[in-house]
Length: 512
Image (cartoon, rainbow, N blue to C red; front, side, top):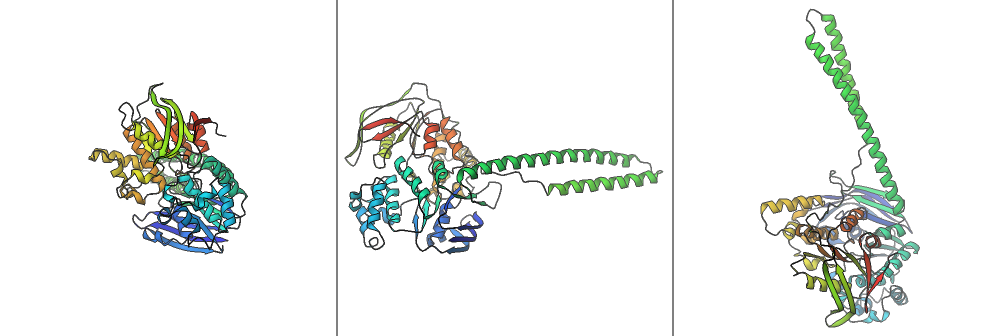
């Protein structure tokens, strides 16, 4: 059993409360998903449970943790720097690893995840693995330690579809207790038996936390029904109250006019009018007291307001890309060959494929070949955000081109519509969450008027509750999109066709 008691987390830089008076109990065998918008403190919560003292640099914590599990393992959202610099062999068989690992299980999990067991003793540096491969090797290692509690931060990020199906089955069927963060709606629907929802609402200074003993689908359905019902009741109460107040104001005005007209020679009538006015005032107080019992109008997390309003539509049939026997390689290592593709505007093409086949390298090569075209405006969102950021600069700096006051005002307004606080607009980018960093790419593309988007896993850091709006924005985008994604809902709703990248070319595929 794990208990969190009266937990409050406050960002020390801008005194923003991320979590307020959170209480929950995690019982043996629970599969609890943490959901919520970007920058809501979800990852920080897992780090606090793991007693990561680095959060003390930016978070003030009040609360109590009772942990009766004997062996906790943690999958972070990003591979730690200390691990990224070492080889696979050192990661699995170095002095720090040997004692704790069950090597039979190590090779078993590697095989299940389609990660060649022979590579476990490779001299390849972890930083040179694909994003999905980095997730796989971490999963292999922590599961080979036989934990009884798993803390997973976005475990499906960058995994190929086969690995995601494996992960879904593992979480659903495992006897382990698992507390995990995910933005993958399909994964949540398949795995979560309980929900912890952290909401930072624009018009509230204190965040809301909801603990529900429900699966994800039921939670979202009941939450939406409750919002609709509560909104209807609240609006009806206010409508009836307005009618009563309108009647009250007519009566008050009538009595007030009569008082003004009453003659001093008629004191009896004046006394009656005074009593009537007293009764009218009592009516007003009664109506005002009724307001205290009204249902609150539900305040929801603001949707993502990304409209690509500056996009110049592409002409139907305009040639965007022609690939003939194209190859993908990195450091003179051939990853894929015989790639043929004709793309015309405004198509939307999804790219899937096994981890390590070269999808991100392929997209980066396309970016380098298209970015200097003058007949189209090309935007690029990489898998590794840090490669495109000056991490010490602020969101305003990243989005600015002229730096003048008018542009800065426009940028701040747009950042505000994407739920950045005034302080976060000036924070160094390296202090922002992955979701907030992802938003900056979308904002940059919108402000630039880009009409060809190259996107590497664009949905992986956005709240599952805001993803329908995000999918709608991409589906109605007036330009062309080439996107790497393993988000099944995104691929089905946004892409005209989906192609699998293999070592021997592109193959059209169907997403179930």
